[in-house]
Image (cartoon, rainbow, N blue to C red):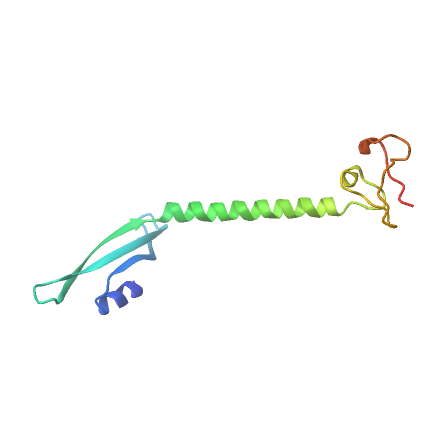
Length: 126
């Protein structure tokens, strides 16, 4: 409430000031408050007119979305780490789907005489 009071002390309008209060059930509520000064004929502020919106559900949904995005990023990082952890010297079939090259820079063209299906063969890199 201190932020709202600072606007009122300066006789300023305010929009979307978020603060937390305890609901009747003891759980926190997040409110968005806006207010406008009301003035008398002489221009003196005699009060404020305002509105408050309960933003608790929206804030919870945003937090759940951020949590789901972090979990997906973690799963993706773990997947990429697992793929990157294959032993490149063995010629794993998934790695052969890429433009594989030998240590001497020669392009891999044969799969040990077993045809061009990387799932049925391994590559000799030396």
